[in-house]
Length: 157
Image (cartoon, rainbow, N blue to C red; front, side, top):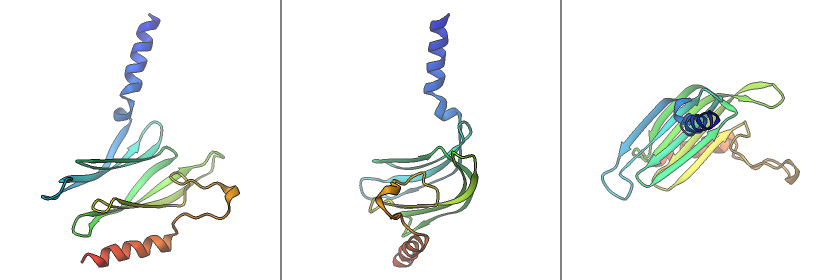
């Protein structure tokens, strides 16, 4: 009987990811030339455990950003730029700190499928490496992200 419990537990553990997430937003594009002809994104909300996942994909690409401590609240903006080669996502999340204090935090993603450049901005430390002992924070600021977004938007109009 113990063996069956282990087998069933392993089967459930192996497929838990697809059972506990919900796709909240997704979109894709087709480009008739080049190696990657189909590409897009998915934003997923985790049910158990709570979390957020953003998947950027293409014929020859798979990038997954997972933040188990961030619960997706709302998608504020999702749009394509630069002739449908750059995606911009702006979402709000709740950051669950280990001390029991939760706070709302924005997460912004800009990915250029043509150049392979990924930029993210979040006040939560879910995707950052930031050793406090090494000095001041060096992550992208909101002003830097806004300037980058404006540049991409204006450069390809």
